[in-house]
Amino acid sequence: MSDAYDRELRVLARQAAEEQGCDSFLQEGVYCMLAGPTYETIAECRALQKLGADAVGMSTVPEVVVARHCGLRILGLSLITNKVVTDYDSTERANHKEVLKTTEKRAKDLQRLVRHLVSKL
Image 1 (cartoon, helix red, strand yellow):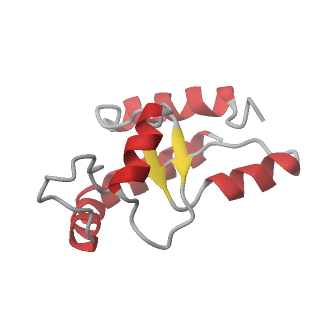
Image 2 (tube, one colour):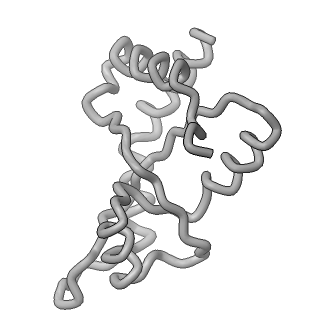
């Protein structure tokens, strides 16, 4: 499973993002999954950072594992919607309001990117 995400699809997604003007917020990195359905704890975030995680979420990984098992080519797109809090003294906390605000801000860009990417397939 060292090659979960299809290299050609990643290149195609990057090209589509550049063509749509979305490349400024498109990043590649290490996505880790926690079971949820709760926001990650400070301790979990600290541990995942030490392990090299760039993003954490409650989905994507199980679906990718099953899809690869079935022999499918995979491209993963995740909209990162809240900041990671790693300081116990911080007054910031992951919250649903922040998630909704970020989703609303980027939804049109993401929809445009996915439509364009699908048209290139």
